Image 1 (cartoon, rainbow, N blue to C red):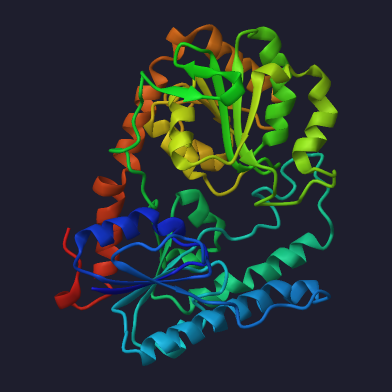
Image 2 (image 1 turned 60 degrees about the horizontal axis):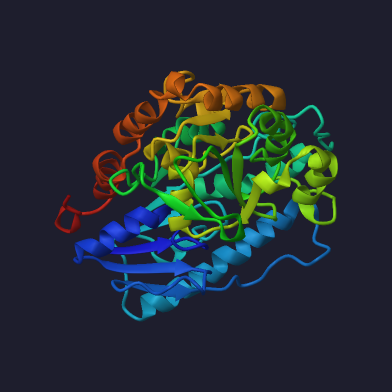
Length: 413
């Protein structure tokens, strides 16, 4: 099959799918992206496109997102046109709908079906907006978010079939989308993500740690409010006071991927150090920044208690990956997390708005590990049965792809 994948940050949600298609060795694969530094992969042609234009610095706020999306969409379309002129017409296009890259693809390939990835519909009420009482929501926010949603609304009429990775994410979209969206996660390689009782990790000057050490872990792309970094830090003094031998490994960059940035110089990390830093034992607090994927696996495998925090928002791959590695997890008690974790069975759920509740549950896990020993294996079992890429998610995705293309080019499992 000839497949065109479109995602500004290659490979994005197509990480596992791309590798599987390459391994089959029978497909003509082209990936259209903005990510220049992603390493070339044998078996796939990477084409880097640039947005045709972007909004001016003083662009009107309500049209800024549309201008960005239109510039990305037209830039991607121009790259696709060159691809077509070079003789490549795909059997199907797979792409993310969030940034506008697919908007004009039907002008280039009018007869090619498009399967679009719908990640999130921005809610003026619900989701992370106004979730915390301390979060003052500007009167302009509903207007800005409705304007942002012009992009998925436009894409609804471009794609032939859509996908949402979780039920909660699907249900964020209005009912008009639902008939076009099937629900299936990108998939987790549970065959590669497993517990390792013999794992060790070198922390540099802080020495080497193993499963014998009392290790707490927290992982996010960036240390930000949407992913609960401030909640973690407010809970940490109580945790450290109760568990004098516990060490915490904190993974995440000092930027903002989602939501509002901290106004403090140095970001949320500096803001929280100013708020609670005098009550934290920094000799047992290891800020690791962003780490390679192999190190992330070791960090989770070595953990006695893994903390996953998020406002009601897109579910992180890291939660499901940690479950696959049999981590004992304390996570936010919010709807998207409840879709993956059952309290007391596959993890513990804590009130995001009460750092003391998070602290109490983490301390309980560390104080009586035998009481919670069942949760890690149960978490892995659930992920294997529900989110495994090869046996659960891949067959569903292939069925949806095959339903859009002629029989003679369909993918065989």
